[in-house]
Image (cartoon, rainbow, N blue to C red):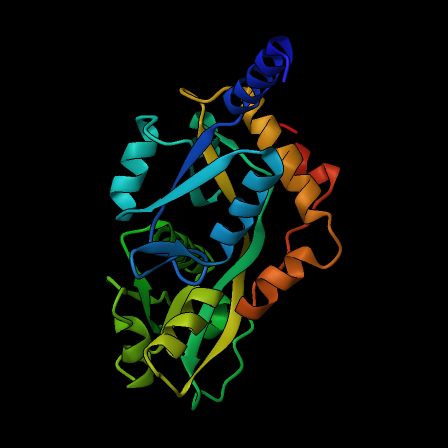
Length: 267
């Protein structure tokens, strides 16, 4: 091979390597969305991000940390992004958000023996409701309680506990609480994980989109745009999102200009 051709080839390869980068993502145990199995981050969110990284031509790594530590590290710019994150105005001040990755819902689980239909706050009056907390989920339930008080209803009594070992779903199954407020997919996962029967999902309180978040202080907007353009391309493949999410009973998110504008998503 002529020397000049060889040098050009080496230069091209080095240029390609320089353009590719390693993206580090942080997550926390939030099954089924993100899980830690044998020390490895798993779950549908990990699969989606991995495919987006491939489309970008970059490699990506995942670290599963306790929730507080993960949020502390991302706030300090010690990783590229964090997931799953819901969008809140205060978060949007500090983070860029990806396009939505999935649509999920939060609501009430009750015992299978509960016969009365739950169709609104009035059907929850005076119930003892378990919730994981302190967390955004428990904050959401506190807001629901406040709405009940404002509406002149008898408010729920909130039982807040940690839930990594299925404490709350077990308490519901044994009738030690009247209801369990949770992300629906998480509650159903916990029931299967801990072999809990005799519970059912009874009422949807709200829906929430989940995103990947990138710290504004340490992230170039060009990277967010590149990530989102790759994600839009991957997610547009026929049947792609359904194949990744349906087995977990998670819905594909709405993907239109109105949603992208609402959350000020760079794309």
